[in-house]
Length: 319
Image: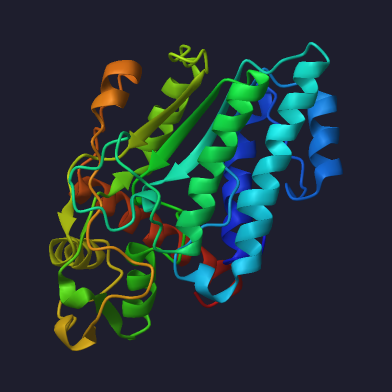
């Protein structure tokens, strides 16, 4: 709920969750995970059996501008969560499972594809990636020292309705709708393993039910790739987005896309390709992505048209 991007979008998500989860006991508590006392208080109050930790400062490029927020959230905040689990374990109220959001960014510029969980990930190309790798190392050490069963989920380019406005599919839509110019990085020679949000959610829920078995050292610790297992060329993605924005009525049929595109070099911290080997997640979790890029972008465009159409009618806010 921080101000990294439009807080109104986050409040909209929260209203949507509350509207469907009230009867199941959902409760929202606002706080900062880098505040150790707050985290401890939450664990004392609820004594969770399973912890699904998805809070982190996201974004590769933003880590060049605001590095402190990444250290506070992704390292200090993450450590606070582990410490809270450890304290509960000492009280005999051991959380059964600690799951956390990882990132495909830890693979850096790995030339071997698809990316496997067994690949080396010790050469991050951004501060964001370095903090996510640090999270994995912290989780392993706590699993080994204090018996906190941990599962890390490396997400690959998650997208969908009500997603992050700094992601390409969303930011491109905003810029084109406002007659702006979109930048095509690395002159279009990039590939991304786009993974639809519903498929990611299915992977998280499946992983929550599978506690890691002890390895040869008796450590309950596991990492899984959650991706679509199908890297898409950036220019193919742009063509699909263009088609769906016109189909959803966000842009006119005669919109001149080419005049609104600027081809630029690779940005610092970016990588040319992401490509997930999901065989481990398939075998252990039954994880099988169901959503094609065409279907996912279509759903995003339909949501975008409805959300911003309603917003304009309600309060005339600009995007």
